[in-house]
Length: 168
Image (cartoon, rainbow, N blue to C red; front, side):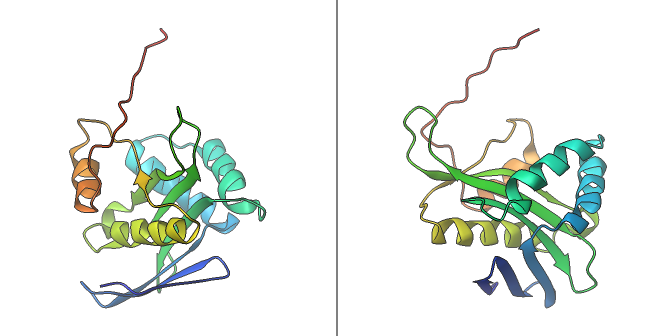
């Protein structure tokens, strides 16, 4: 079981039961961006520094931000193990306010240690404290790893259907 406490935009995980390892979850700092870019590039095969700097500015750097979250997980030795980005919004075709997981990544070397669950739960705690009762995300239908992860966290098909049209 994990223990989470929130104070001054800090999220602390006191114990990951699987390994009794301390992992801190905190708001992303500018000093984390290079590691976030590197982790994302390792997973996706594309370095997107400009994109992640923009995400940082919109979700973590702006101290007046409302209901936006950019959290990072770091073991005691301080090297980035993963991150999650989310927001609470309500504008899609009359949808009531709900939380959205926009990105969640864990270093391949750190997987299977509960870090993804830790990040997801920290995001859920923050969103619940900020007034939402539902959390959503989108996952490709053929992305078995992420489907398995999010289903394991209790997410299931919701009441909305994604529609798409190619523009080429």
